[in-house]
Length: 300
Image (cartoon, rainbow, N blue to C red; front, side, top):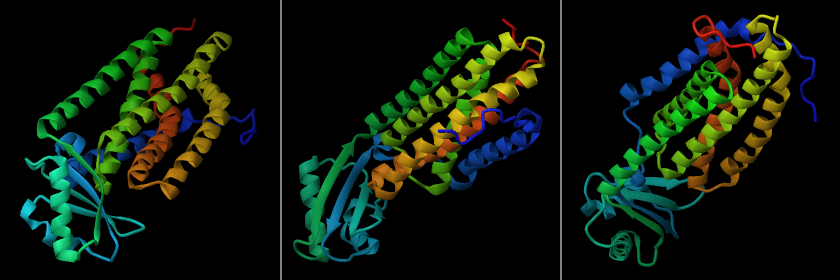
């Protein structure tokens, strides 16, 4: 299948200043979400607490649920799931076990809304210490993964290409982070898994481009580096676009037909894939080109 002609010749790097401006704006907007919107809304996996999914057989609103469960304190969070009378209730982890908590919540809701009106669909509990440990482990796992990726890219290609790939991944993770802060979506272990998936996907895209650059460095030795990189990006453009488009089709199916949890997972993938495809073309290669002034790329 061929959406892009094999002899296409787009001057990507010649217009790289526009990419610099767009990349800077997106990073600034993502980081600006922290002072404006506050920190990421962590799920119970990282913050600790209890999350209960309840389905009602009649129409209720969040105020009724808050009133029924007011004994659990002011930090109670109630969110309606689109497409039905189901709600997700978040609260600080009480001392009672999960079975007692489930029965207690069901009793309070039915006393307020009506006997037999509530069905507890699921309940998850995580202690605050476990949540903090998971936060620390997630941060260290991401940092260590990026370090090993830099080492791999440096040995497989060149050190500058490794730096370009790492900056590319950090750029994508910052964008996904900013998206979740701005939208107020919950960040949990499922979303962390999505971000790691995006990291692997984006790295694969970047490696394909770098591999073609390495091949062209041998066959186009006398050409300027900017022309070699442009040719490499154009030669892999069809593969990059096709892969991204077909992957997005699968992810969009999750957005349309998936549950609440799968939809958040899909949003992380959609944002990650779109900006990952962009960064493998407009971020990694231009950075390598700029670094070539200080750390020249070897023509093997």
